[in-house]
Image (tube, rainbow, N blue to C red; front, side, top):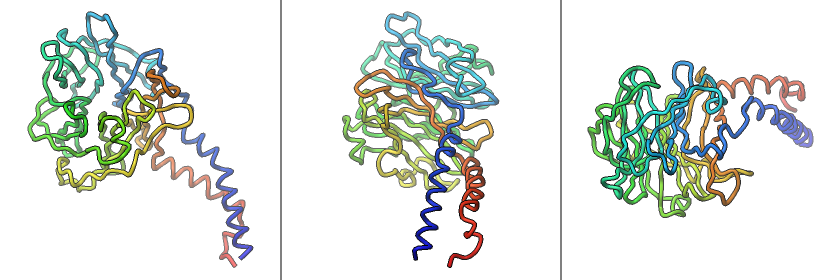
Length: 338
């Protein structure tokens, strides 16, 4: 019995001793934040497409007479806000406010969505969709929709070719809905709630959920969302998992399963992480969580940060390096334990 306990203790020490190098491996050459609160950025919407990372932010500063969306393009995620190209895309002038833009590349066209308050109906928030006139992300755009229901839209292009819209309910704030689309700017189905405020952490700030982001991983479909109030230290990310098959419709609410509690919340130093996007590494083996968070408790300012969600190949490489280390520490493991 004592021999077994000793072997287990040595094994734990070997693995623990290796954990620091694993952590460094998982977050190689990243230096957070990648954009500071001085830049006045939030709600990162990062994608990777054909060798480049893209992000779009609202260039929405008090006193601006010409509203624009600002697009970033860079060949590294780390340098997205500092080393890439920047272009401002003009918006319709009849807007009181606009926020939470997203960028997409579908069928050789670029699309931008953003939440807005039109001046002629400032109490009714909605979503706009703009389509590029050419294949140039920095070219001109045309408004294709100006009154989609809800805010914080994301357009998800499923592997089967169908388009789906995800949106936060503006009127009550207590749900995130999904709707089928005929194309990236035309709704063709009915809005179906797939997230409601059923957990305590979702109810602590006026029963409000927002910022949906759907992504694929290992053949499964997931959705992050945010709750807790962006202006509080309680802001956090939740997770929904689609449990249906490839032939099941995404607006089948019973196929979406919610994780218990937030999956990403305040840690040491930074507080209130949320409203994120998930972007793959160029080789498709790693997933990066790009999000905003408060640099310290009690502030409304936000930094943009990135965190590696360890991919399959990372785990395989880690285990490949870990096993020889264990065998070196415990040569007795090559034979049956007594």
